[in-house]
Amino acid sequence: MEHVTKRLISWASLIDAKTLDQARTTAEMPFVYPHLALMPDAHLGKGATVGSVIPTLRAIIPAAVGVDIGCGMIAVRTQFAREQLIRRDLAALREAIERAVPLSAGHYNRKIVATAAPRIAELEELAEAKGFDPSDYAGHWRHQLGSLGSGNHFIEVSADEEDRVWMFLHSGSRGVGNKIAQHHIRAAQRLAKQWWIELPDPDLAYLVEGTPEFTRYIAELRWAQHFALLNREEMMDRVSRQLAEAMGEEVEEQERINCHHNFTESEVHYGKRVWVSRKGAIQADEGRLGLIPGSMGTASYVVRGRGFAPSLNSSPHGAGREYSRTAARKTFTHAQLREAMAGIEYRDTDAFIDEIPQAYKPIDLVMEDAGELVEVLHTLRQIVNVKGD
Image (cartoon, rainbow, N blue to C red; front, side, top):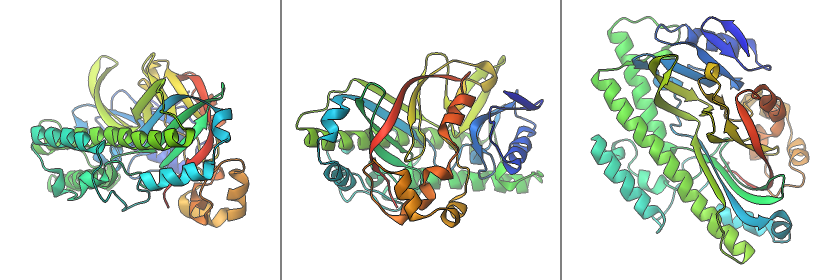
């Protein structure tokens, strides 16, 4: 833990100057209280640093939540053992999952399946209660529920240190959440211009509690967060069905964890109620279970929070990029990707070069930096990996 300034505390031992400058700028916003907590996986983001925990008094910076509202992880431990799984046709399992879950940006379901219908009804009821129509943002949002997306989103079948098989996936609120986020980022920027508010970065534009714009943002933000949570549940149901078919018996769920890492909650820290925006960070209150993935070829972790107050009860959400997507494509090759993914069943394509493990910070270093924030309960290693282009 390093006190970079009075208002910025960092747990990142591996961080570049631009990222640190960006975090320092955000920390100096007048309503940040008591300080910004910078996680070990921190890297440059839009407006605010990815891997930062930003507590604010009576204001929220929409870009500091991120455009994939509610993005996060879900993991389910099954009754199966690794030895049972690896005797199956892993390529067939991967392909079955790829057919069951729409992958890649812009791809969504052609029809609403039985497991999705009650979740969509729940989201319709929630939107009505919050006084807005998600179709104003994305007319096909119902068909997005149960779709993965692209980038660093993934579905994996893994095994832990006791060779127990887990299903593990990463996704958020898809296109509808992105449209909601972009709308409110623009609204905050418009208000800043209207009131002649000078900002160090236009993406640090904020909404003030008590205004109609703030109230609407919170309502739609919470809806999008719930969409993201149900989206992960829907995909997990589909992955479970494919795994059951591959194994020849129904999945018996032993344990389940579902957590956001791009979200805002109202919490009390250092004696004051604040809005805590975690942009690439998970809640790590004492005893709370969480999930921290590595890259597509490295370990992921099931953790338990330590409730460390200076971190605002938070921890990192993953490995964190060390190379931008463009830089990764210029630096690494398809052959290096194949080498990094040796022993893991995955779709072998150069579309994933920008997701090569070497493009990310070493997850072991991130977890070492996070030692006072979380306790590691399980280490998961991939057997099957599914990603969108």
